[in-house]
Amino acid sequence: MFAKITLLNKSLPLLLLLPLLLLACIDSLAETLRDGDIIFQTSRSAQSAAIQKATHSQYSHMGIIFYRDGAAYVYEAIKTVQYTPLKDWVVRGEGGHYVVKRLRDADRILTPAAVAKLKQAADKLKGKPYDLTFEWSDERIYCSELVWKIYQRGLGVQVGALQQLQSFDLTDPIVKAKMKERYGAAIPMAEIVISPADMFAFAGLVQVAEQ
Image 1 (cartoon, helix red, strand yellow):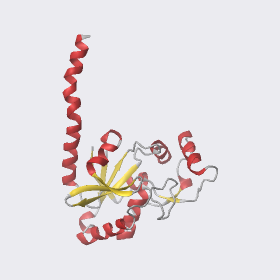
Image 2 (image 1 turned 120 degrees about the horizontal axis):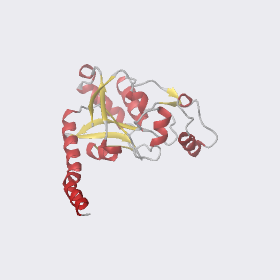
Image 3 (image 1 turned 60 degrees about the vertical axis):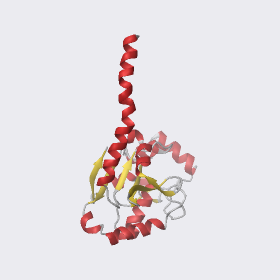
Image 4 (image 1 turned 180 degrees about the vertical axis):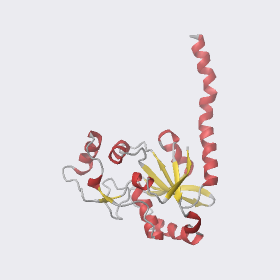
């Protein structure tokens, strides 16, 4: 018993250091990010498992990086479309894991004027409520829809191909249960959607960071 307690006590300093190490990594990340970078994570939300299974991807949430007063924020759709400090966004995800991607030709495309256009497109969606039924309208907005529309409306860039809801794998029991909860028997199979998985796989993006 004494040996177990001693081992536990020795591991406590490391456990206490882990949050500090994560924060240090995030500080380092903020130094390498640019406006317009796209960040992905595995959400801990109630719908995350269904999204992962339907899209065959571990990533179920995403946002776009914008700097405000020198600090990095993730512009995202959660309860509403809002800015979230980068540190808060990262620690909210599963295991603090994230992947950051950037336009392949960002040095040419993302000029200061282009970034301003992205921010203008983003501002028009600020405060919109989260879209639980993934409809392709501006009344409510979900995470990947937000980033896709910012790039398309701001710069005419389509980050990933739009699909219909029926193109996803809707056969898993977890997915079926979530679909029934959201739509009942009237599932809009032809609804236009964009998923984090499709945007993550877009060939026009390159990975620039991962933790």
